[in-house]
Amino acid sequence: MPVIELQDVRKVYRSGALEVEAVRGVSLAIETGEYVAIMGPSGSGKSTLMHILGCLDQLTTGSYHLSGEDVSGLDEEALARIRNRRVGFVFQQFNLLASSNAWRNVELPLLYAGMSREERRDRAMAALDRVGLSDRVDHRPGELSGGQQQRVAVARALVSDPDLVLADEPTGNLDSVATRDILGLFAELHESGRTVVLITHEPEVASRARRVIRLRDGVVVEDAVA
Image (tube, rainbow, N blue to C red; front, side, top):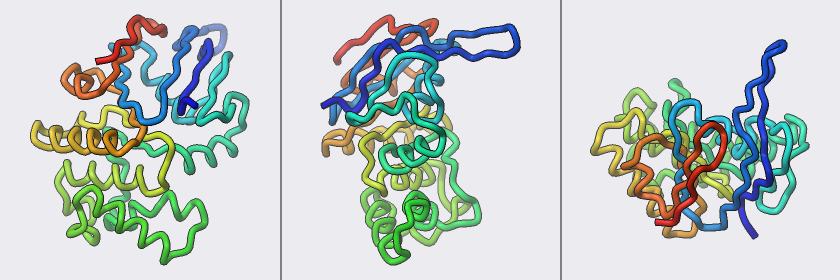
């Protein structure tokens, strides 16, 4: 069963009489354990598609099944539950709470899920250990390098054991050394069977994936396996 299955997905933004069709009839499937990069220039629709895949936005027409469940017509509350349980996000800006240490940042998805404090801490510690930060669990973001902050973000994405890890320009704020480390971490996640989807405009980043989907003007123009 595919983790992601889109059928003729369209997304139209309306502002008064103006309509902009950001995604125009995209159909694709991503299987469990795939490592996929979605590429495209500014205005190609890749950010809109990312928001749909991550249940951050609703599509206008078409269908989207996430791990077999049709999420196309769900309301915002239901989408929030899906996001928290099935999707782990990694963003370019890290999106960490500056006043909280690493393990408290990582535990946030579990806090929203109503898990006990002891189990939250245990799982947060295990996730940080997995990304090589077991010696930085009590450090706040301001005490960590950019690469370490992104590793905290990856740990947070993994802590709820999601069906999908969705990374939006995850190396955009990193130097070349940190970029290599983070891409190595994504490769490890893929090798362990995790489904990873990267949104990127950087060919070097996309080349690390096993499949590259290219968008232009809201449509898929290439879908190639490396």
